[in-house]
Amino acid sequence: MFACGLATVRKSRGSCIRRFFIYFLHHIMSSTSRVREFLHRPYRNFFLLWIPVLFSILAEPLTGLVDTAFVAKLGAESLAALGVGTVVLTSGMWLFNFLSVGSQTEVSQAFGSQDMDRGRRFGSLALIFAVTIGLLMAVLLVLLAPVLTIAMGATDLLSEHAVIYIRFRALGSPAILVTMTSFGILYGLTDMRSPLVIAVAVNVLNILLDALLIFGFGPIPALGIAGAAIASAISQWIGALWCGYIIYKRIGFTKNIDLADVKKLLAIGRDMFVRTGSLILFMLLATRSATMLGAESGAAHQAIRQVWVFTSLFLDASAITAQSIIGYFFGSGHIDNARKVARLVCYISIWVGLFLMAVMLAGASTVAAILVPASGVVLFYPAWTISAILQPVAAIAFVTDGIHWGTGDFTYLRNVVISATLSGVVAIILLEVTSTVSLSLIWWITGGWVLIRAILGVFRIWPGMSTSRLNSPVIDKSEC
Image (cartoon, rainbow, N blue to C red; front, side, top):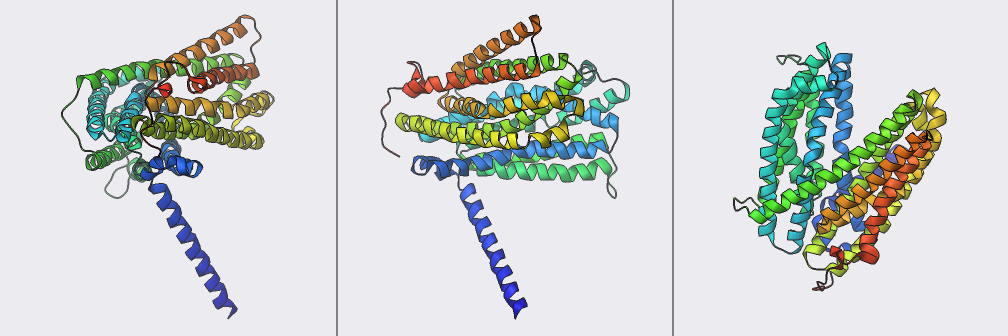
């Protein structure tokens, strides 16, 4: 009797867990209506939009860790070649993130204004750019692979492996840009579900193909480092075709490209290129300054920077979510509602930043034990504490980026990052000239760099500037 009762309890508990899981998935997946009714239950709706975006973003770096683990079994040369190839490929891809960001803004505004002809035109244009640029990149990478590997310091067998990896991975370049652009279009349509499903499926397929092609199975030969590259290229093309099918079903494609849209996309690309380049310039200079202090400082800085990059994924999810919501209300002419959303997402992001800060402070000793050599621990803790308390500030910097992306205010954001980077670069140079540089001071300067972005991002909203798009004279059509 007791056994029967226990079985009943377990069955009931399992049924409850399944019901909860189905309920949870249903509410996360039904994201389209979350934007329309955002202001009715803002906190709940924000996180139900934010969670699938976050997991979409996390899928690729997690798969990268699995790739690294597989290739590591091939030997040091193959692992180093993977590192060289990944740096070369990702360095090329970041130049074109404007295709995703610009598409999300334009499509979300078109969705809000119920002008899907505009969304279809801009989405089709962005995908044409993605395919064209991707094909050109593939050709250049195949031809220049030996030169690029030598420029990265690879020689002999390492260079040979890196060339093989780059050339096979290059075949997936158009697919990567198409997928990246498609995700922007789908986020603009407030479809957070499809990118999540595609990202998870593609990365799971990549892992399975890794195991099959790297080491071989049955009639399939072991392809080594080439197998890792081919696995990535195949999975990326499947993801790109899947994205194309979903977009075709949702809004379709068109050949009617407007010259004004071409000019707008190129202008966004110009502003995003300068902005992203300024961000990378500061991070490279900060890393260089920390490395020049010695091996211990460089190791401690690298550990902190890696965790900083990881926490940035959480904040980037906030920016993407805010961009879709703001773009929808801005496009629909509900400027007052867009301002309300801006205020709410800033509050929510501060709480996300506080959560990350608490986790970082609590996990300091664990990170130090895993990532930092014993000789660098003394330098690590003060700088780590600074980076932790900066998380709420970084959260505001990220989410205000998303807010202004949603209104299409790309030029302002470019100028903000240029101003912050110039201030940060001057501060680091002054420290080096006066020989007062230290790892803690480098992270305080990083804090100032982030703070400038956060303050200028908020100031554009409250009290707002005359040129701010959130101060548009457009009158609300209705309350949502």
